[in-house]
Image (tube, rainbow, N blue to C red):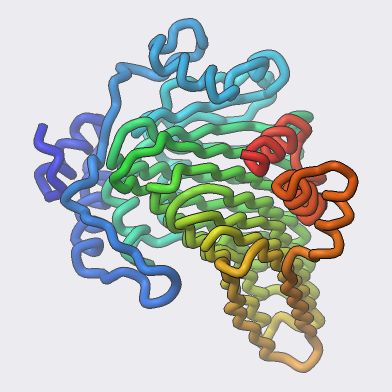
Length: 430
């Protein structure tokens, strides 16, 4: 099949996935909107040659639930990354996506939850999926939500029933192995009333000279007095455009937490969002962005307060070195009816040399007299005094800087499971 992006390709993809007319029409409408829309008029420059992207690739015939059955080449790739070690023994669920499809999925929990690929959910739970699909993140919001709508493949679908609490996190891992590949997973998470979920996501790609594209969409629904924590460690290679839309809506008394680590990619534009719809709902975002040579990481968070007595907290830590650009871009809006609400934003930036830069682009809006927004921002360079002190103890300049960076992100690491905190340390050192 010719992989040129056109209506014929969209029809071929939908047919290959054996989808119904509803999804085919959705894909076609999304593609037509993608053709109409321009790139975002803010943030870093996006220079993608859409004629050179491979929009779908998969060499697997089905998703395996036993690791030994996975294709040896794919299995070796994940083993080398350290993704599969003991997950089958200590996690309730794990899902791995390679290129365009989920190639391995294991759900060990005996609880009455749904955890599967979004493609599989469309076949096994069509009514439930369609109730939430394209409901929170509309396909026509921007050029890349439209592209995702046309080409989505893989991703996780999770439903946690009322009054259900998992004692371990669910996990997904996304890998781009091919040159100039587009990956467009679609993740939908529903945490029903009085339930809780911890979900962890990891992302990597192999380095090539030509650009790849990752344009995922995440929709999360947090019920009454429910809680969801969504943790991401993103280490895409520096030829990947990472253009992602992630949004959660939170009902009465619910809590949504984003823990977001951005280490890789050429360009990242990602602003995890919370719509605090219910009274007394809470939204938290804790993020780091570490931009090195040739990288522009434009990240932040959005908090929309609608319910009364709602609270939000954004902590953003940015690091830049060797010409890297690390920006915070955020929106906090407390609406007229969101009385007695409060929001806090804290942006800390560490610049490691004179060749790098960081900027802050906040937009804070309060539309009633009983609510408060607090915004604090600090920017600092590596202290020569601290460097000299550490180097006087026998450390090289690079090791001294590494130690200061690890101290700067210590609060972020505390929020990660042990194995992910160790992995983050390794990525920072590399």
